[in-house]
Length: 144
Image (cartoon, rainbow, N blue to C red; front, side):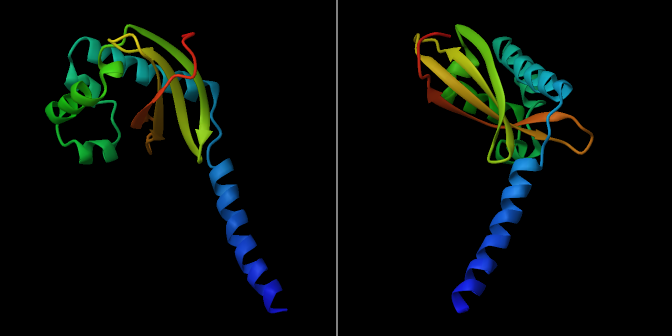
């Protein structure tokens, strides 16, 4: 009987978390278009060395970590060359990763390496989509 209580106590919170993480977002076609547009505009701003504009697409959390466009730009130039100066850009799918809308972007970095950038997105209270993080991984293939 004690085992049953423990299992029931663990299953219910797990189901609640599972339901929240899988159903919290239902992306519309408009949401997906806006997400791609935001990332595309930020990539274009980097091409133009317009760090102020690029910074405008960052979420409040990112802005707390990087408190100015200058600091944000220095981080991107120093650590995200594939995003800062891609030779090629192709947009992939948008999916939910741990309940967070994420966009895959396939890039070729300045050295010719194939990279996948995963952009985590955050919808603001006013409905606007902002970039809440980006991490780079080696692309699974050279077919971008």
